[in-house]
Image (tube, rainbow, N blue to C red; front, side, top):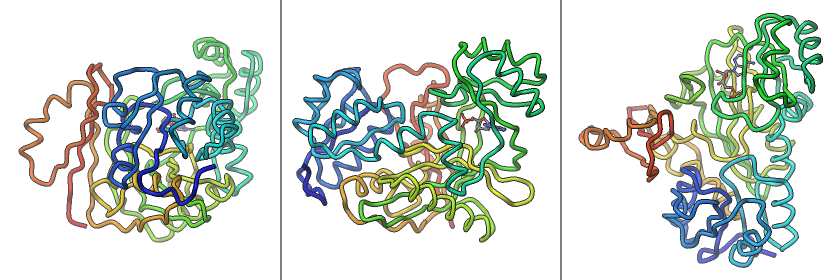
Length: 359
Ligand code: AMP
């Protein structure tokens, strides 16, 4: 079993080698840890800044054993880690955070909405459907339009279809692959917001100010933070975050996506049991960013303050936009974060910039 708080010089494991893993690894290195990344690809953004890369699938028992041999605490950069992998690591004496409850809830949109509503964190109305017939009946019962999403494994707006008439639900179900779906009532939102929150191993919590988020084609384009919000809205968001963290007995950073409705109330869209793209602004807007906060939490360290010292506009660099690095490098008050990805496919997240403004 790991000694907690985990002392500097220990090795921390990260499942996943993408940009979130890379920024977690950099934050962990700054706190004196060595990082071991488990990733299918031998040449990954996180692997290139980590002390060790273990090449393998997340459910490869030999790779998990190798990770457990070097790392005392393991975390992950994405939510589709198989539950069995977490159980396997735990059985090998490794502390895994966030825990299996958080993963189970975040991997299934129905379990997620049920958990949220039971915890007092409101969501849109929803129904589950496992067949085309059920999808048609549920759409008719809810009243179209509804947003059909696969229950599992959707991201960046993938795996979703608007259904304008109940009769169209069968075709949408087939287009989404004939897998179990959730049907969601439309959220008539005026803004999309998010809150990045953390809970330590001692149950202490910390929340960053809200971010206002703008998406294009289902992909986050820009975030503005701290968002201009009333005290009441900030209080509602903090209350929602506290309920989620406590309800999941959570350890680590969570990203909570919110809809702000016209009447000034908030609904939760979804939760990500990990560091989140809408929290990248904290790298240049706060003394300790979401990546350090996550490492602190999982390593059993005290949480850091979340007070902002700047307003930040975060812009994702998608596809070949990152090739403008030399122009961006001339801009004052712009901090460039590039992920070291080799292949700038259209829409792929290659980096981001944080543009600093006065608070
Ligand atoms: P998601 O993959 O659930 O985060 O959804 C991606 C985006 O689709 C969100 O950021 C919203 O812009 C939009 N969206 C998701 N769910 C709803 C909903 N129930 N009503 C309206 N828009 C939604």
